[in-house]
Length: 580
Picture 1 (cartoon, helix red, strand yellow):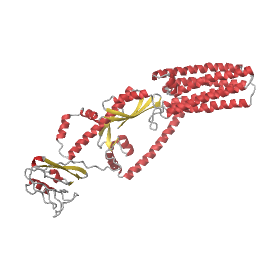
Picture 2 (cartoon, helix red, strand yellow):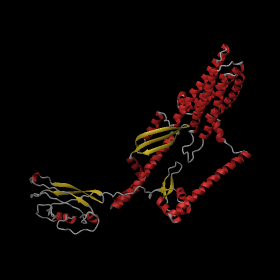
Picture 3 (tube, one colour):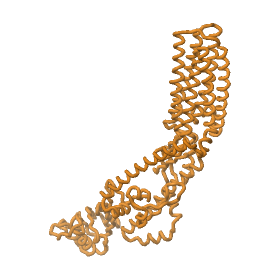
Picture 4 (cartoon, one colour):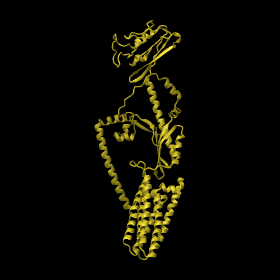
């Protein structure tokens, strides 16, 4: 009658209280009392349902039902004693045989004799036993062929005999790839090498060979560089040329040429006149030339491809170069200008004819102004592409290299005007203090420019967020998808060079994901599989199979959202959607 009770040991502790002292017409037709127990660590429920139409009263009964095996453990059953609790057979026998005995069970364990009209119903809720995986469990981990050969010192021929599993690829350019079970790879490695100690020795030996190989590559690269320097490198460098022939690279190269010429002419004018303001202008042009050469180096490094050490690339090199440039302007430009101005105030000297100085300043004003116009036009063009204003583009430091050129040339134009004005006052009054004040003014101007560059580039390197409107646009795209219930903890940071990294916690709708999985399956076959499930083991196998497939479908939904997000927003290069 109850196969589950006789096949598996289980334990139940229950107390049944049956009071039937009310008249027959006032009593309900059924009296049900729940009992609770457990089996192999899982909670079970047992219900006793009795039809209540007997005239005789039932006194308080006490039932303690322990185990079909006679003990609380899964060992052999012990023989029942006179005071031992009733077993399942007694309970069921008492429920099947009629009797006029008014008691359900006596305290000595005698079974209760129920009438034929009375029945007993038992409902057991089975719970799967919890499996203890321990602190480290890698038996079900997947491993690629490359890792299997590198970490376990195997050859491709060794992997041909192992089980191959096709899994969803994490890369956009491939849909699926082949993996192996880690347990199979570990067993194969032990079979090939004999013991874990031998495998460790082989790993150390291969690491030494790999280190020597890398050293040889470095030496060969040095020899190849010397060979190219000797015979000439005929390989076209179209990438570098394209970098410096348009955009910020073009602006920086023009600024380097013009500022270099200005430094030479200003230095000659200072030697001829001895003007403190002209010295400050010469130092200013030298600082601009050095800083813009540093910017050119940052631009060339920023276009390098990502590698294993720098997986997100080198785009921040522009910000780093601009930050160092700002520090250089402060130290070299502002510092020397202040020093020369203070020394001019402490030890004033008469200035010679300033005619050549005025001519050089006029030429410097024209050249610096031309470079400033080139930088302004480039920023206007980039601001229009990003659909923001000129002021916002500069303040947000979208293109640090062009910003540095813009601010340096603007400071150069203002510095030339300031130096010419102070030198003119010195010529009219004969007082050299005006010239020294001009040097201090140029130094203060350079200090303000350097402080702005240091601040904006530091903010960019710390991971500045993109505009709130853009973040809202990305969030709305995800929330409009039927598989997404909510978006939390959104972070969108500017990585430089108009590259955005987007991260969000996504609450997926499990019903939509499951329906997406079922739409690709044969429903009739799934129904047939469900009908064939008879035991707990078959149910576990069925649920594990389809549960793993649903998890894969969820991963595919994440990949789909990331791909669509990148396609609709080209500036978003790295997307990290975490399942909530």
